[in-house]
Length: 113
Length: 113
View 1: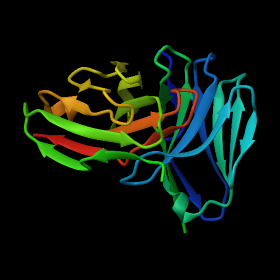
View 2 (view 1 turned 90 degrees about the horizontal axis):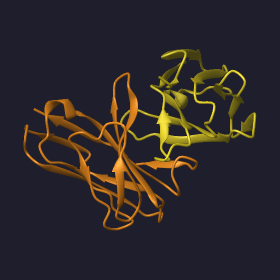
View 3 (view 1 turned 180 degrees about the vertical axis):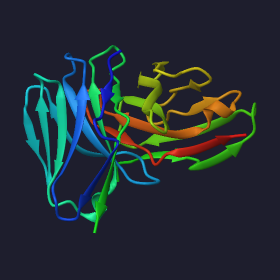
View 4 (view 1 turned 30 degrees about the vertical axis):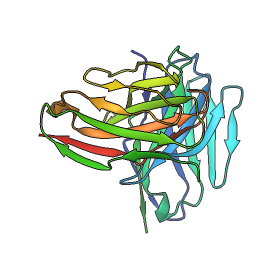
């Protein structure tokens, strides 16, 4: 069945390096995508979003890239800091009647000092 | 401060004892959801509500009930909890559903013994 998934369950990077977290989606009708960050003991926190009419969107230290041809979404974090250590989820709006976001299973980012 | 508030944060209960987890948002959002989060499965939608008195099933509704009598509140009810409902629960609200950012509560960790 269709699903939102992630290529790597755990990503370990050195402090100061750039991080790239990937997400594959399979519903070509999806028109809105979000990246969330979840720290231990907390609820998911919005990082950045992108609509399907865009290929790239930048925030503070973060960039989301959307490749609709291969149905791929990525989150780039520049100059990764210890405070970036968390689980990151991508979510998509599949444009169903439920108007629900569908979430991937998450990638844990570990930042090594 | 814009927020989604869940209570309680932690709950241990016994099988069959009815419980309610409350959720309140102060952003005048129309759309509210309940999710459960289990290891390796990401966030799965339990129930959602598009507006007052409008609720419907999500992906995993069995064993749960909800109500939406007021716009700000969306309680989750477990009439007869079972151990397989041990999980981390999140309430979320958004302006209009899947094509807008969802704001999450801090989570309720439920253990059913």
